[in-house]
Image (cartoon, rainbow, N blue to C red; front, side, top):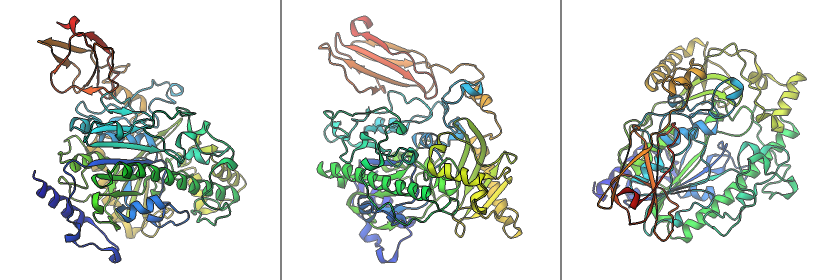
Amino acid sequence: MKLLQFLLIVCIGFVGCQSKDKSKVKTSKEAVLELPERPNILWLVTEDMGPYIPPFGDTTVATPNLSRLANEGIVYPNLYSTSGVCAPSRAAIATGMYPSSIGANHMRVNSYTKERGLPPYEAVPPSEVKMISEWMRRAGYYCTNNYKTDYQFREPVTAWDENSPYAHWRNRDKNQPFFSVINFTETHESGLFEPYGFREIETRLYHAGDKKYKWNNFGEHHANNRMNEEDTPIHLPKDTKFNIPPYLPDTEKTRRDMWKLYNNIAEMDKQVGAVLKQLEDDGLLENTIIFFYGDHGGPLPREKRLIYDSGLNTPMIIRFPTKIQAGTKDNQLISFVDFAPTLLSLINEEPKPYMQGQAFLGPYKAKERDYIHAAADRFDAETDVIRAVRDKQFKYIRNYRPDQGYYLPIEYRERIPTMQELLRLKNEGQLNEHQMQWFRERKPKEELFDCSVDPFELNNLANNPEYQDKLKELSAEMDKWLEAIGDNPDLPEGDLIKKLWNGSDTQPKTSAPTIITKNGKVTINCDTEGASIGYRISSNQGKTSKVWQIYQEPFELPLNAKLEVQCHRIGFKPSKILELLRRDLE
Protein backbone atom coordinates (compact mmCIF):
# COMPACT_ATOMS: atom_id res chain seq x y z
CA MET A 1 0.00 0.00 0.00
CA LYS A 2 1.38 3.39 -0.85
CA LEU A 3 2.32 5.71 1.95
CA LEU A 4 -0.32 8.33 1.05
CA GLN A 5 -3.10 5.72 1.08
CA PHE A 6 -1.85 4.41 4.42
CA LEU A 7 -1.83 7.89 5.95
CA LEU A 8 -5.33 8.68 4.70
CA ILE A 9 -6.74 5.47 6.16
CA VAL A 10 -5.00 5.96 9.51
CA CYS A 11 -6.10 9.57 9.81
CA ILE A 12 -9.69 8.84 8.80
CA GLY A 13 -9.73 6.19 11.55
CA PHE A 14 -8.42 8.69 14.11
CA VAL A 15 -10.95 11.37 13.17
CA GLY A 16 -13.93 9.03 12.98
CA CYS A 17 -13.53 7.55 16.45
CA GLN A 18 -12.63 10.58 18.54
CA SER A 19 -14.78 12.00 21.30
CA LYS A 20 -13.12 15.34 21.97
CA ASP A 21 -13.20 18.09 24.47
CA LYS A 22 -14.43 21.00 22.31
CA SER A 23 -11.68 23.21 23.64
CA LYS A 24 -9.12 20.85 22.15
CA VAL A 25 -10.78 19.81 18.90
CA LYS A 26 -8.42 19.30 15.98
CA THR A 27 -9.72 19.47 12.43
CA SER A 28 -9.12 16.57 10.08
CA LYS A 29 -6.81 18.82 8.06
CA GLU A 30 -4.64 19.42 11.14
CA ALA A 31 -4.59 15.67 11.85
CA VAL A 32 -3.23 14.68 8.41
CA LEU A 33 0.39 14.37 9.48
CA GLU A 34 2.83 11.84 8.17
CA LEU A 35 3.53 8.66 10.09
CA PRO A 36 6.63 6.61 9.37
CA GLU A 37 5.95 3.66 7.09
CA ARG A 38 7.66 1.44 9.69
CA PRO A 39 7.05 3.21 13.01
CA ASN A 40 8.86 2.19 16.16
CA ILE A 41 6.46 1.08 18.88
CA LEU A 42 7.17 1.48 22.60
CA TRP A 43 4.92 -0.03 25.27
CA LEU A 44 5.20 1.39 28.79
CA VAL A 45 3.32 -1.07 30.99
CA THR A 46 2.65 -0.61 34.68
CA GLU A 47 0.92 -2.99 37.09
CA ASP A 48 -2.32 -2.96 39.06
CA MET A 49 -3.34 0.43 37.68
CA GLY A 50 -6.77 2.00 37.90
CA PRO A 51 -7.54 5.46 36.49
CA TYR A 52 -5.75 7.18 39.38
CA ILE A 53 -3.88 9.80 37.34
CA PRO A 54 -4.64 13.38 36.27
CA PRO A 55 -5.23 12.64 32.55
CA PHE A 56 -8.19 10.49 33.70
CA GLY A 57 -9.61 12.96 36.20
CA ASP A 58 -7.80 12.07 39.43
CA THR A 59 -5.53 14.94 40.50
CA THR A 60 -4.48 13.49 43.86
CA VAL A 61 -0.83 13.22 42.84
CA ALA A 62 1.04 14.94 40.03
CA THR A 63 2.30 12.76 37.18
CA PRO A 64 4.12 15.28 34.95
CA ASN A 65 5.46 12.71 32.51
CA LEU A 66 2.16 10.92 31.97
CA SER A 67 0.37 14.26 31.81
CA ARG A 68 2.75 15.41 29.11
CA LEU A 69 2.18 12.16 27.24
CA ALA A 70 -1.57 12.73 27.43
CA ASN A 71 -1.28 16.37 26.32
CA GLU A 72 0.69 15.22 23.29
CA GLY A 73 -1.42 12.14 22.62
CA ILE A 74 -4.85 10.53 22.92
CA VAL A 75 -6.37 9.23 26.16
CA TYR A 76 -8.47 6.07 26.09
CA PRO A 77 -10.71 5.80 29.18
CA ASN A 78 -12.48 2.60 28.08
CA LEU A 79 -9.69 0.03 27.96
CA TYR A 80 -10.55 -3.21 29.78
CA SER A 81 -8.44 -6.23 30.62
CA THR A 82 -9.89 -9.69 30.08
CA SER A 83 -9.22 -10.59 33.71
CA GLY A 84 -8.68 -8.70 36.96
CA VAL A 85 -5.23 -10.19 37.42
CA CYS A 86 -1.97 -10.08 35.51
CA ALA A 87 -1.02 -13.47 34.04
CA PRO A 88 -4.32 -14.18 32.21
CA SER A 89 -4.37 -10.58 30.99
CA ARG A 90 -0.83 -10.88 29.66
CA ALA A 91 -1.80 -14.07 27.85
CA ALA A 92 -4.51 -12.09 26.04
CA ILE A 93 -2.08 -9.32 25.14
CA ALA A 94 0.58 -11.72 23.89
CA THR A 95 -1.73 -13.83 21.72
CA GLY A 96 -4.80 -11.77 20.80
CA MET A 97 -6.97 -14.55 22.28
CA TYR A 98 -9.24 -14.70 25.33
CA PRO A 99 -7.50 -16.52 28.19
CA SER A 100 -10.54 -18.70 28.89
CA SER A 101 -10.40 -19.96 25.29
CA ILE A 102 -6.83 -21.32 25.54
CA GLY A 103 -6.62 -22.58 29.14
CA ALA A 104 -4.92 -19.43 30.46
CA ASN A 105 -7.49 -18.07 32.89
CA HIS A 106 -6.52 -19.81 36.14
CA MET A 107 -4.04 -17.69 38.10
CA ARG A 108 -1.51 -19.26 37.80
CA VAL A 109 -1.50 -22.41 35.72
CA ASN A 110 1.78 -23.62 37.25
CA SER A 111 1.08 -22.90 40.92
CA TYR A 112 -1.24 -24.27 43.63
CA THR A 113 -1.92 -27.29 41.42
CA LYS A 114 -0.16 -29.90 43.57
CA GLU A 115 -2.45 -29.04 46.49
CA ARG A 116 -5.40 -29.72 44.20
CA GLY A 117 -4.03 -33.03 42.93
CA LEU A 118 -3.27 -31.54 39.51
CA PRO A 119 -0.05 -31.22 37.52
CA PRO A 120 1.44 -27.84 36.63
CA TYR A 121 0.52 -26.99 33.06
CA GLU A 122 0.56 -24.25 30.45
CA ALA A 123 -2.05 -22.63 28.26
CA VAL A 124 -2.22 -24.33 24.86
CA PRO A 125 -3.50 -22.10 22.07
CA PRO A 126 -4.16 -23.46 18.56
CA SER A 127 -1.10 -24.52 16.60
CA GLU A 128 -1.06 -21.43 14.36
CA VAL A 129 -0.80 -19.03 17.33
CA LYS A 130 2.45 -17.22 17.92
CA MET A 131 3.30 -14.42 20.31
CA ILE A 132 2.73 -10.99 18.84
CA SER A 133 6.43 -10.19 19.37
CA GLU A 134 7.35 -13.12 17.11
CA TRP A 135 5.05 -11.83 14.37
CA MET A 136 6.72 -8.44 14.77
CA ARG A 137 10.17 -10.04 14.51
CA ARG A 138 9.12 -11.87 11.38
CA ALA A 139 8.15 -8.48 9.95
CA GLY A 140 11.68 -7.19 10.54
CA TYR A 141 11.25 -5.52 13.95
CA TYR A 142 13.79 -5.66 16.76
CA CYS A 143 11.74 -6.80 19.75
CA THR A 144 12.75 -6.35 23.39
CA ASN A 145 11.08 -7.07 26.71
CA ASN A 146 12.25 -5.55 29.96
CA TYR A 147 11.68 -7.82 31.70
CA LYS A 148 8.43 -9.45 32.96
CA THR A 149 6.85 -12.32 31.04
CA ASP A 150 4.14 -14.20 33.02
CA TYR A 151 2.08 -15.27 29.99
CA GLN A 152 0.70 -18.54 31.46
CA PHE A 153 3.04 -20.34 29.07
CA ARG A 154 6.77 -20.46 28.58
CA GLU A 155 7.76 -18.08 25.82
CA PRO A 156 9.67 -19.67 22.91
CA VAL A 157 13.24 -18.56 22.29
CA THR A 158 11.89 -16.96 19.11
CA ALA A 159 9.67 -14.53 21.05
CA TRP A 160 12.21 -11.75 21.64
CA ASP A 161 15.52 -10.46 20.37
CA GLU A 162 16.20 -9.55 24.00
CA ASN A 163 14.35 -10.44 27.17
CA SER A 164 16.21 -9.24 30.28
CA PRO A 165 16.65 -6.20 32.56
CA TYR A 166 19.20 -4.96 30.01
CA ALA A 167 16.91 -5.32 26.99
CA HIS A 168 16.79 -2.09 25.01
CA TRP A 169 16.08 -0.72 21.56
CA ARG A 170 19.63 0.68 21.59
CA ASN A 171 20.99 -2.79 20.87
CA ARG A 172 19.26 -3.14 17.49
CA ASP A 173 20.87 -2.86 14.07
CA LYS A 174 21.18 0.64 12.68
CA ASN A 175 17.85 1.98 11.34
CA GLN A 176 16.01 -1.23 12.29
CA PRO A 177 12.48 -0.50 13.57
CA PHE A 178 11.80 -1.70 17.11
CA PHE A 179 8.99 -2.92 19.30
CA SER A 180 10.02 -2.53 22.94
CA VAL A 181 8.09 -3.40 26.10
CA ILE A 182 9.21 -1.86 29.39
CA ASN A 183 7.40 -3.05 32.52
CA PHE A 184 7.18 -0.98 35.70
CA THR A 185 6.31 -2.81 38.90
CA GLU A 186 6.26 0.00 41.48
CA THR A 187 2.46 0.15 41.35
CA HIS A 188 2.08 -3.59 42.03
CA GLU A 189 -0.21 -4.76 44.83
CA SER A 190 2.83 -5.77 46.89
CA GLY A 191 3.74 -2.07 47.12
CA LEU A 192 0.98 -1.85 49.74
CA PHE A 193 2.46 -4.55 51.96
CA GLU A 194 4.25 -3.91 55.24
CA PRO A 195 7.14 -3.15 55.46
CA TYR A 196 6.79 -0.67 52.66
CA GLY A 197 9.45 0.53 50.24
CA PHE A 198 10.75 0.70 46.70
CA ARG A 199 12.59 -1.99 44.82
CA GLU A 200 16.14 -1.02 43.94
CA ILE A 201 15.75 -2.67 40.53
CA GLU A 202 13.63 0.28 39.47
CA THR A 203 15.42 3.31 40.79
CA ARG A 204 14.42 6.78 39.72
CA LEU A 205 17.23 6.73 37.18
CA TYR A 206 16.12 3.94 34.89
CA HIS A 207 19.07 1.71 34.01
CA ALA A 208 17.62 -0.37 31.18
CA GLY A 209 20.22 -0.96 28.51
CA ASP A 210 23.15 -0.03 30.73
CA LYS A 211 25.03 -3.32 30.90
CA LYS A 212 27.64 -1.85 33.27
CA TYR A 213 24.99 -1.30 35.94
CA LYS A 214 24.84 -4.06 38.55
CA TRP A 215 21.34 -4.85 39.82
CA ASN A 216 21.38 -5.45 43.57
CA ASN A 217 18.32 -7.67 43.73
CA PHE A 218 17.31 -8.71 40.22
CA GLY A 219 15.02 -11.72 40.21
CA GLU A 220 13.77 -11.38 43.77
CA HIS A 221 10.05 -11.22 44.37
CA HIS A 222 8.14 -7.97 44.82
CA ALA A 223 7.37 -8.62 48.46
CA ASN A 224 10.97 -9.48 49.34
CA ASN A 225 12.41 -6.14 48.29
CA ARG A 226 10.92 -3.78 50.81
CA MET A 227 12.56 -1.36 53.19
CA ASN A 228 11.46 1.08 55.84
CA GLU A 229 8.83 3.61 54.83
CA GLU A 230 11.15 6.43 55.89
CA ASP A 231 13.71 5.39 53.25
CA THR A 232 11.34 5.88 50.33
CA PRO A 233 10.87 8.97 48.17
CA ILE A 234 7.77 10.90 49.19
CA HIS A 235 5.71 12.56 46.48
CA LEU A 236 2.71 13.77 48.47
CA PRO A 237 1.99 14.50 52.15
CA LYS A 238 0.91 11.56 54.27
CA ASP A 239 -2.05 13.56 55.57
CA THR A 240 -3.48 14.02 52.05
CA LYS A 241 -7.28 13.75 51.92
CA PHE A 242 -8.23 10.83 49.69
CA ASN A 243 -11.48 9.90 48.01
CA ILE A 244 -11.98 6.48 49.56
CA PRO A 245 -14.19 4.26 47.35
CA PRO A 246 -17.43 3.30 49.14
CA TYR A 247 -16.52 -0.40 49.26
CA LEU A 248 -13.57 0.37 51.57
CA PRO A 249 -13.67 1.70 55.16
CA ASP A 250 -12.39 5.21 55.75
CA THR A 251 -9.78 4.42 58.42
CA GLU A 252 -6.19 5.38 59.10
CA LYS A 253 -4.90 2.12 57.57
CA THR A 254 -6.94 2.58 54.41
CA ARG A 255 -5.75 6.16 54.06
CA ARG A 256 -2.14 5.02 54.51
CA ASP A 257 -2.61 2.42 51.76
CA MET A 258 -4.10 5.09 49.52
CA TRP A 259 -1.03 7.21 50.22
CA LYS A 260 1.17 4.28 49.25
CA LEU A 261 -0.83 3.73 46.06
CA TYR A 262 -0.44 7.33 44.88
CA ASN A 263 3.16 7.57 46.04
CA ASN A 264 3.98 4.46 43.98
CA ILE A 265 2.25 5.99 40.95
CA ALA A 266 4.37 9.14 41.27
CA GLU A 267 7.54 7.06 41.49
CA MET A 268 6.47 5.08 38.43
CA ASP A 269 5.88 8.37 36.60
CA LYS A 270 9.51 9.32 37.22
CA GLN A 271 10.61 6.03 35.69
CA VAL A 272 8.38 6.68 32.67
CA GLY A 273 10.05 10.07 32.33
CA ALA A 274 13.52 8.48 32.37
CA VAL A 275 12.57 6.14 29.52
CA LEU A 276 10.98 8.95 27.50
CA LYS A 277 14.18 10.98 27.96
CA GLN A 278 16.19 8.08 26.55
CA LEU A 279 13.88 8.03 23.54
CA GLU A 280 14.28 11.78 23.04
CA ASP A 281 18.05 11.64 23.56
CA ASP A 282 18.21 9.05 20.79
CA GLY A 283 16.22 11.29 18.42
CA LEU A 284 13.45 8.70 18.14
CA LEU A 285 10.45 10.46 19.68
CA GLU A 286 8.92 11.51 16.38
CA ASN A 287 9.11 8.13 14.72
CA THR A 288 7.79 6.14 17.66
CA ILE A 289 4.22 5.31 18.66
CA ILE A 290 4.14 5.25 22.48
CA PHE A 291 1.55 3.26 24.44
CA PHE A 292 1.11 3.62 28.19
CA TYR A 293 -1.32 1.29 29.98
CA GLY A 294 -1.75 -0.94 33.05
CA ASP A 295 -2.03 -4.74 33.07
CA HIS A 296 -5.52 -4.54 34.70
CA GLY A 297 -7.36 -2.42 37.28
CA GLY A 298 -6.28 -1.21 40.70
CA PRO A 299 -4.40 -3.00 43.53
CA LEU A 300 -6.80 -2.45 46.42
CA PRO A 301 -9.24 -5.00 47.89
CA ARG A 302 -12.34 -5.43 45.72
CA GLU A 303 -10.31 -4.21 42.77
CA LYS A 304 -7.61 -6.65 41.73
CA ARG A 305 -8.89 -10.15 40.77
CA LEU A 306 -12.52 -9.03 40.51
CA ILE A 307 -14.27 -8.32 37.24
CA TYR A 308 -16.01 -5.21 38.36
CA ASP A 309 -14.71 -2.19 36.47
CA SER A 310 -12.38 -1.51 39.41
CA GLY A 311 -10.52 -4.72 38.49
CA LEU A 312 -10.74 -4.47 34.69
CA ASN A 313 -10.56 -0.83 33.70
CA THR A 314 -7.08 0.59 33.22
CA PRO A 315 -6.00 3.88 31.65
CA MET A 316 -4.31 4.02 28.27
CA ILE A 317 -2.50 6.87 26.55
CA ILE A 318 -1.13 6.68 23.01
CA ARG A 319 1.20 9.33 21.64
CA PHE A 320 1.74 9.33 17.90
CA PRO A 321 4.63 10.88 15.98
CA THR A 322 4.12 14.60 15.39
CA LYS A 323 1.42 14.58 18.09
CA ILE A 324 -1.47 13.46 15.89
CA GLN A 325 -4.77 14.33 17.66
CA ALA A 326 -2.84 15.72 20.64
CA GLY A 327 -4.90 16.31 23.78
CA THR A 328 -7.97 14.38 22.63
CA LYS A 329 -10.04 11.53 24.00
CA ASP A 330 -11.22 8.34 22.32
CA ASN A 331 -14.18 6.73 24.11
CA GLN A 332 -14.40 3.51 22.13
CA LEU A 333 -14.46 0.20 24.02
CA ILE A 334 -11.12 -1.60 23.76
CA SER A 335 -10.15 -5.04 25.07
CA PHE A 336 -6.70 -6.47 25.70
CA VAL A 337 -7.37 -8.99 22.92
CA ASP A 338 -7.34 -6.01 20.54
CA PHE A 339 -3.67 -5.17 21.14
CA ALA A 340 -2.11 -7.89 18.96
CA PRO A 341 -4.22 -7.21 15.85
CA THR A 342 -3.74 -3.45 16.33
CA LEU A 343 0.04 -3.81 16.43
CA LEU A 344 -0.01 -5.67 13.14
CA SER A 345 -2.35 -3.10 11.63
CA LEU A 346 -0.04 -0.24 12.68
CA ILE A 347 2.85 -1.82 10.74
CA ASN A 348 0.55 -2.41 7.75
CA GLU A 349 0.19 -6.17 8.36
CA GLU A 350 -3.19 -7.85 8.29
CA PRO A 351 -4.26 -9.31 11.67
CA LYS A 352 -4.07 -13.09 11.84
CA PRO A 353 -7.37 -14.97 11.30
CA TYR A 354 -7.12 -16.80 14.63
CA MET A 355 -7.01 -13.57 16.67
CA GLN A 356 -10.21 -13.04 18.65
CA GLY A 357 -9.63 -9.30 19.03
CA GLN A 358 -9.82 -6.59 16.39
CA ALA A 359 -7.63 -3.68 15.34
CA PHE A 360 -8.68 -0.30 16.72
CA LEU A 361 -6.06 1.69 14.77
CA GLY A 362 -4.32 1.57 11.42
CA PRO A 363 -5.40 0.49 7.92
CA TYR A 364 -7.07 -2.70 9.25
CA LYS A 365 -9.10 -0.82 11.86
CA ALA A 366 -12.39 -2.66 12.44
CA LYS A 367 -15.82 -1.31 13.23
CA GLU A 368 -15.94 -0.07 16.81
CA ARG A 369 -16.80 -2.93 19.16
CA ASP A 370 -20.12 -3.01 21.03
CA TYR A 371 -18.99 -5.14 23.99
CA ILE A 372 -15.98 -6.17 26.05
CA HIS A 373 -15.81 -9.54 27.86
CA ALA A 374 -14.05 -10.84 30.95
CA ALA A 375 -13.70 -13.98 33.04
CA ALA A 376 -12.57 -14.99 36.54
CA ASP A 377 -11.70 -18.52 37.65
CA ARG A 378 -9.03 -19.75 40.09
CA PHE A 379 -6.78 -17.33 41.96
CA ASP A 380 -3.93 -19.10 43.76
CA ALA A 381 -5.62 -21.76 45.92
CA GLU A 382 -9.17 -20.37 45.66
CA THR A 383 -11.60 -20.99 42.80
CA ASP A 384 -14.68 -19.21 41.55
CA VAL A 385 -16.36 -19.12 38.12
CA ILE A 386 -17.61 -15.75 36.88
CA ARG A 387 -18.11 -14.28 33.41
CA ALA A 388 -18.89 -10.67 32.47
CA VAL A 389 -19.90 -8.62 29.44
CA ARG A 390 -20.07 -4.83 29.24
CA ASP A 391 -21.28 -2.29 26.74
CA LYS A 392 -20.60 1.42 27.07
CA GLN A 393 -23.14 1.79 29.88
CA PHE A 394 -24.14 -1.55 31.40
CA LYS A 395 -22.21 -4.46 32.93
CA TYR A 396 -23.72 -7.96 33.09
CA ILE A 397 -22.16 -10.58 35.38
CA ARG A 398 -23.05 -14.26 35.50
CA ASN A 399 -22.07 -16.19 38.62
CA TYR A 400 -21.69 -19.91 37.99
CA ARG A 401 -21.31 -20.64 41.71
CA PRO A 402 -24.11 -18.65 43.35
CA ASP A 403 -23.92 -20.75 46.52
CA GLN A 404 -20.33 -19.63 47.07
CA GLY A 405 -19.56 -16.25 48.61
CA TYR A 406 -17.82 -13.46 46.72
CA TYR A 407 -14.84 -13.06 48.98
CA LEU A 408 -11.95 -15.48 48.44
CA PRO A 409 -9.44 -15.78 51.32
CA ILE A 410 -6.35 -15.27 49.19
CA GLU A 411 -3.30 -15.22 51.47
CA TYR A 412 -1.29 -12.90 49.23
CA ARG A 413 -4.02 -10.23 49.24
CA GLU A 414 -4.41 -10.51 53.01
CA ARG A 415 -0.96 -8.98 53.43
CA ILE A 416 -2.48 -5.61 52.48
CA PRO A 417 -3.30 -3.60 55.63
CA THR A 418 -6.62 -2.43 54.17
CA MET A 419 -7.64 -6.05 53.61
CA GLN A 420 -6.74 -6.83 57.20
CA GLU A 421 -8.79 -3.81 58.26
CA LEU A 422 -11.81 -5.01 56.25
CA LEU A 423 -11.68 -8.43 57.89
CA ARG A 424 -11.30 -6.92 61.37
CA LEU A 425 -14.25 -4.56 60.92
CA LYS A 426 -16.36 -7.36 59.42
CA ASN A 427 -15.73 -9.53 62.46
CA GLU A 428 -16.68 -6.59 64.70
CA GLY A 429 -19.88 -5.92 62.72
CA GLN A 430 -18.73 -2.41 61.76
CA LEU A 431 -18.91 -2.55 57.95
CA ASN A 432 -21.74 -0.71 56.23
CA GLU A 433 -24.08 -2.16 53.61
CA HIS A 434 -21.82 -1.40 50.65
CA GLN A 435 -18.70 -2.73 52.33
CA MET A 436 -20.50 -5.93 53.38
CA GLN A 437 -21.60 -6.78 49.83
CA TRP A 438 -18.25 -8.43 49.10
CA PHE A 439 -18.66 -10.68 52.15
CA ARG A 440 -22.12 -12.05 51.34
CA GLU A 441 -22.29 -15.81 51.71
CA ARG A 442 -24.24 -16.23 48.45
CA LYS A 443 -24.18 -14.48 45.10
CA PRO A 444 -27.06 -13.73 42.75
CA LYS A 445 -26.91 -15.82 39.59
CA GLU A 446 -27.02 -12.65 37.54
CA GLU A 447 -25.95 -9.08 38.17
CA LEU A 448 -26.63 -5.99 36.08
CA PHE A 449 -25.19 -2.55 36.74
CA ASP A 450 -25.70 0.82 35.12
CA CYS A 451 -22.10 1.96 35.28
CA SER A 452 -22.95 5.49 34.18
CA VAL A 453 -24.69 6.19 37.51
CA ASP A 454 -23.25 3.34 39.58
CA PRO A 455 -19.53 3.23 38.72
CA PHE A 456 -18.68 1.11 41.77
CA GLU A 457 -21.27 -1.53 40.77
CA LEU A 458 -23.14 -1.66 44.05
CA ASN A 459 -26.79 -1.55 42.89
CA ASN A 460 -27.81 -4.78 41.15
CA LEU A 461 -30.60 -4.16 38.59
CA ALA A 462 -30.99 -7.77 37.46
CA ASN A 463 -34.42 -8.14 39.07
CA ASN A 464 -35.65 -4.68 38.14
CA PRO A 465 -38.46 -5.01 35.54
CA GLU A 466 -37.35 -1.81 33.81
CA TYR A 467 -34.05 -3.39 32.79
CA GLN A 468 -35.13 -6.82 31.58
CA ASP A 469 -34.50 -6.03 27.91
CA LYS A 470 -30.93 -5.01 28.66
CA LEU A 471 -30.47 -8.09 30.86
CA LYS A 472 -31.62 -10.36 28.02
CA GLU A 473 -29.46 -8.55 25.48
CA LEU A 474 -26.27 -8.90 27.50
CA SER A 475 -27.06 -12.47 28.58
CA ALA A 476 -27.54 -13.44 24.94
CA GLU A 477 -24.28 -11.69 24.03
CA MET A 478 -22.49 -13.67 26.72
CA ASP A 479 -23.86 -16.96 25.40
CA LYS A 480 -22.78 -16.01 21.89
CA TRP A 481 -19.29 -15.12 23.11
CA LEU A 482 -18.83 -18.30 25.15
CA GLU A 483 -19.79 -20.43 22.15
CA ALA A 484 -17.60 -18.44 19.76
CA ILE A 485 -14.44 -18.84 21.81
CA GLY A 486 -15.16 -22.37 23.07
CA ASP A 487 -15.28 -21.41 26.76
CA ASN A 488 -17.04 -23.95 29.01
CA PRO A 489 -17.12 -22.23 32.43
CA ASP A 490 -18.34 -25.38 34.20
CA LEU A 491 -15.36 -27.47 33.06
CA PRO A 492 -13.27 -28.53 36.12
CA GLU A 493 -9.63 -27.57 35.92
CA GLY A 494 -8.49 -31.19 35.83
CA ASP A 495 -10.68 -31.85 32.80
CA LEU A 496 -9.41 -28.66 31.22
CA ILE A 497 -5.83 -29.91 31.53
CA LYS A 498 -6.72 -33.20 29.85
CA LYS A 499 -8.45 -31.28 27.07
CA LEU A 500 -5.37 -29.10 26.56
CA TRP A 501 -3.19 -32.22 26.49
CA ASN A 502 -5.50 -34.02 24.07
CA GLY A 503 -6.51 -36.63 26.66
CA SER A 504 -2.99 -37.38 27.86
CA ASP A 505 -1.79 -37.29 31.47
CA THR A 506 1.45 -35.58 30.48
CA GLN A 507 2.25 -32.32 28.79
CA PRO A 508 2.93 -32.75 25.07
CA LYS A 509 6.47 -32.13 23.87
CA THR A 510 7.63 -30.39 20.74
CA SER A 511 9.40 -32.71 18.30
CA ALA A 512 13.14 -32.39 17.83
CA PRO A 513 14.28 -30.44 14.78
CA THR A 514 15.34 -32.15 11.58
CA ILE A 515 18.38 -30.46 10.03
CA ILE A 516 19.47 -30.95 6.44
CA THR A 517 22.41 -29.24 4.74
CA LYS A 518 23.25 -29.09 1.08
CA ASN A 519 26.08 -27.03 -0.40
CA GLY A 520 26.52 -25.19 2.89
CA LYS A 521 22.82 -24.23 3.15
CA VAL A 522 20.78 -25.35 6.14
CA THR A 523 17.14 -26.41 6.02
CA ILE A 524 15.31 -27.05 9.32
CA ASN A 525 11.97 -28.77 9.84
CA CYS A 526 9.86 -29.82 12.82
CA ASP A 527 7.14 -32.46 12.85
CA THR A 528 5.10 -30.61 15.49
CA GLU A 529 2.49 -28.55 13.71
CA GLY A 530 2.86 -24.83 14.34
CA ALA A 531 6.17 -25.09 16.21
CA SER A 532 8.45 -22.08 16.05
CA ILE A 533 12.02 -22.92 15.12
CA GLY A 534 14.81 -20.88 16.66
CA TYR A 535 18.49 -21.05 15.83
CA ARG A 536 21.75 -19.31 16.61
CA ILE A 537 25.24 -19.69 15.24
CA SER A 538 28.66 -19.77 16.90
CA SER A 539 31.40 -18.72 14.51
CA ASN A 540 34.58 -20.71 14.02
CA GLN A 541 36.25 -18.03 16.18
CA GLY A 542 34.07 -19.15 19.08
CA LYS A 543 31.75 -16.12 19.16
CA THR A 544 28.16 -17.13 19.98
CA SER A 545 25.21 -14.99 19.05
CA LYS A 546 23.04 -14.24 22.08
CA VAL A 547 19.98 -13.70 19.89
CA TRP A 548 17.91 -16.63 18.71
CA GLN A 549 16.90 -16.10 15.09
CA ILE A 550 13.54 -17.24 13.73
CA TYR A 551 13.95 -19.86 11.05
CA GLN A 552 11.92 -18.89 7.99
CA GLU A 553 13.98 -20.09 5.04
CA PRO A 554 17.25 -21.96 4.32
CA PHE A 555 20.42 -20.06 5.28
CA GLU A 556 24.19 -20.27 4.87
CA LEU A 557 26.24 -21.88 7.63
CA PRO A 558 29.98 -21.11 7.65
CA LEU A 559 32.42 -24.00 7.70
CA ASN A 560 33.24 -25.23 11.23
CA ALA A 561 30.55 -23.00 12.74
CA LYS A 562 28.35 -24.46 15.47
CA LEU A 563 24.59 -24.40 15.02
CA GLU A 564 22.08 -24.53 17.91
CA VAL A 565 18.43 -25.24 17.12
CA GLN A 566 15.32 -25.47 19.31
CA CYS A 567 11.69 -26.06 18.32
CA HIS A 568 8.81 -24.95 20.50
CA ARG A 569 5.06 -24.86 20.10
CA ILE A 570 3.39 -22.64 22.69
CA GLY A 571 1.99 -24.74 25.56
CA PHE A 572 4.14 -27.76 24.68
CA LYS A 573 7.48 -28.56 26.27
CA PRO A 574 10.23 -27.21 24.02
CA SER A 575 12.51 -29.64 22.27
CA LYS A 576 16.02 -30.07 23.57
CA ILE A 577 18.55 -27.74 22.03
CA LEU A 578 20.31 -29.59 19.21
CA GLU A 579 23.95 -28.59 18.76
CA LEU A 580 25.82 -29.55 15.61
CA LEU A 581 28.87 -28.45 13.60
CA ARG A 582 28.67 -27.89 9.88
CA ARG A 583 31.21 -30.64 9.24
CA ASP A 584 28.88 -33.03 11.11
CA LEU A 585 26.06 -32.14 8.76
CA GLU A 586 27.68 -32.61 5.37
